[in-house]
Amino acid sequence: MHRGRDRDIDMMPPARSELLSGWGRYPSAVCPLTEPGDIRAVMEGLARSPSGIARGMGRSYGDSSLNGSLVLGMGKLDRMLAFDPDTGVLTCESGITLADIIDVLLPRGWFPAVTPGTKFVTVGGMIAADVHGKNHHGAGSFCDHLLSLDLALGDGSVVTCSAERNLALFAATCGGMGLTGVILRATFRLQRVETSRIRQRTLRARNLDDAMAILDAAQDATYTVAWIDCLAGGDSLGRSLIFLGEHARIGELPEADRAAPLARPRRRARRVPIDFPAIALSWPSVRLFNALYYRSNRAGTSLVDLDPYFYPLDALADWNRIYGRRGFVQYQSVLPIAESAAGLRRMLAEVTRTGGASFLAVLKRLGRQSFGLMSFPRPGYTLALDFPATAGNLKLLDRLDAIVREHGGRIYLAKDARTSPAMIACGYPRLAAFQAVRRRHGLADRFCSLQSRRLEL
Image 1 (cartoon, helix red, strand yellow):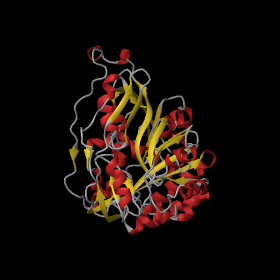
Image 2 (image 1 turned 60 degrees about the horizontal axis):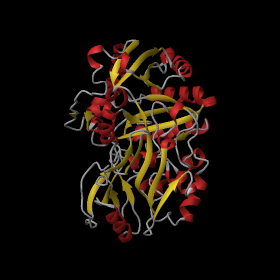
Image 3 (image 1 turned 45 degrees about the horizontal axis):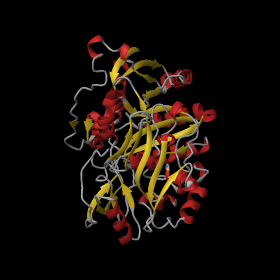
């Protein structure tokens, strides 16, 4: 099975200097970028450069895919190599996007077992960040469904890693932010679905305690997520909309849709044509938006398509331009179960007190600790916030760091653009084991990013 571009053996194209950033557009740096067309070109590029980092769609938010020596754009390694229609096991190159996989395999009745909040990510990027979704409490993270991967170590060798082969390197690569080598190919399981619809149940929570009680009681639901109005204060602190979801069965569809249950409506994303001015995300603007959004979502059950349930922001291309030219910072933390209520209350109170304007505030309950040495998920509650990259907001995030640290939490490397080495060291107890794997295989200086140097990974 070959899906994607047909190609001849490619020589390493020359690197070109480009101003690159993550999805948050903060920070940015001029990096030598090359886009190899096949594995041989990847190996050539690694041989020519003292260090490098792989880059997929650039959807990590900070500086994890930036390197001053070499950035390998992996988007041309985009083929599906094999698929078993009985088990849902797919083997593909690392540069293929989740969007392409869904386009090809959803009509056959298969959907990713775990998906992040955008489908415009590569398989390699999902492994490097060990992404999680709205079903982590039941399904775990993406790498829990990963069977094996092929990894280029930078010395001319390619090794296969799995739970049975090179386990330490496998655990370091899953969630390792590309710092163990270049992921070339991967084999993983998808899940079978009957339709392209989600049966969504919407619930309204008056405050944070109410929201957490609803999420705690909904652990049998396949998908759970809450949108939080982080500017509501007082008795309404943490008021939320909770969206529970199940894959709809054929019999739940309107009769007219049952003949083609896996069909999806054609959607063309609208584009954000300009960088928005700062006033667009001022405290009054976001407060008004949050109030209207909360009031407009009524409690009840409905059938919705997969795209608006899992990927609502994908309907708006270049939505990161809403934050203006200075960019924005996504801040995601997870707190242990026992500390979640107190820690989240302190964080939301701090945001409300300082007037921090975040309209993409998302709360989820996570399940078991992932096996990846640097994987983010652990049992607890995770809160994701976004803020324009202003000096005042960066100081606010330092204060949120202190709260997370005091409550025994950690922050997500795939979202980070500004935290400290000490914050990572206290939040990731297996950091020393990760660094030992990197040293053992000679990877510490070979694969690095602006983030890894900033955080001393």
